[in-house]
Image 1 (tube, helix red, strand yellow):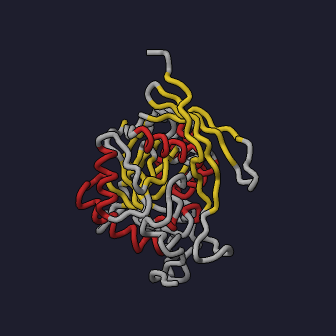
Image 2 (cartoon, one colour; image 1 turned 45 degrees about the horizontal axis):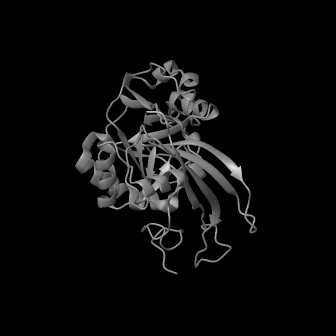
Image 3 (cartoon, helix red, strand yellow; image 1 turned 45 degrees about the vertical axis):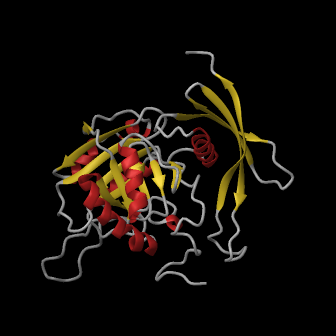
Length: 323
């Protein structure tokens, strides 16, 4: 079995040969993006600010927590997804540093942006409001999208190997909309792209795939090829939305809405099933979604064997009577 340099993932992981639908991170609804040029630790909650060097030139003081590290930990404790971001290529020193507060769940999405002259200004951010999906008034409303490419090589070598070139290529095409970022989940799908504020996640991307996804996002649509799902939704809901879009051809960002996700009777093989109700325009659908294990030539003991969700049935319930 041949693997790329520094890559421990199964063959086909980064080419699109392995399915990537219904694999977006399920917990990210509120996001906090903080500019930090690096280096990035393996996990961002491990971030520290270097302590001052003593006057005698002896051993530096131990690293200390600064306002960025403290804000990251506080955000995580409240269920907010923090991400460190930086520009591709030559990075500017910080401060000033760019910060975005983002809410990506449901039909009402928003993003606020602010450039800080001092990281201590992060103390002014109302994390409780952000966690609840309420605009905190921390910055100005931002109407341009933010495009995040995972380049977190210390977390996984594949993210740097495939993500960094993609970030450079997208920056050449879309300029200031593009940021490198820390881990977004699904390293085996690198290169990964997250389109905010809507929270669309794409994987297995090369430059042309990514550019097509970005162009669609800018015109208010999704591209189903290489779409991992929408962050913040349960995986069965991501799968149901994907298949309703594929069945109806409705690609607008708000054209499909998941109403409910409920457990369904399990088949004889005992795999979990879910009944998902989805609306699209004036039509309602029920999707019977089943969790399945994808087998791979690596064998049954391989940690990279992926569980995914497939739609077993898709039923049109009714045409809504209301106009």
